[in-house]
Length: 289
Image 1: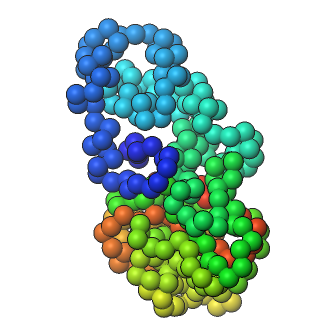
Image 2: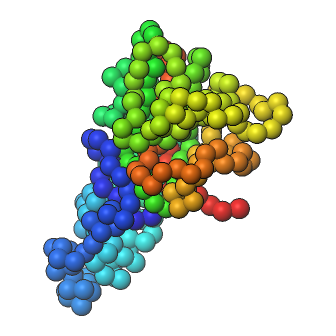
Image 3: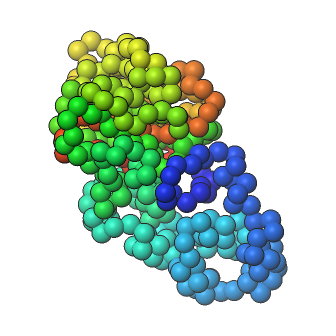
């Protein structure tokens, strides 16, 4: 996956523009390395690793494009460079808990944080906890509250895990949304899927929702099991095929939505139960098979 814009305040979209923004053409890094022929391009690996360990993620992604030598040093996703940045960026709670257990590399953990639920693109009734991945809904009556991921997608294939760590209430929806979709409304409703800007799966009644209508039950089988608290659901967004699918454990549940629009789509959730918590972890490109 190409380097994305920093996952700080609001939300941005990851597409062709993201790769272009990381181009080394005309950058100070490229000038310093001289395309790999300069002094910087011949520095020993241990020296470069020491220098790189002080840089932030955006700088490291640009450095990886400077020359083969620099790229090769940064290719080890469990190197001291990525470990150092990981320890500076992520909280102890996230690193010591099992939140990131399905991400074996430090670089993968950093990407997950970069794509996590946004504390700035959400309902005023929710907040992201210090671990950087878990959304907490305050006990506000007669309100449905949601949040988008920091980064949306307009191309490629992407997967993320999401799970509830508290009661679902009457409505608990996971899915995707455009930047225009609402993240708060009055009453207890299925916010994701309530308009043409979002697509959702209500884990309470297994209904698929879009444009204010129920698009059938999911998964499409007799006596489909209900969601269990703590169970990780894997969401697979394929912007090339324009589909949204789900997995539970190691079981592929099928494609839930087809014909998605060619626009920027963000991971999203909506909840109604007071003090419930939802965690989302971006995994990167899904594995086939």
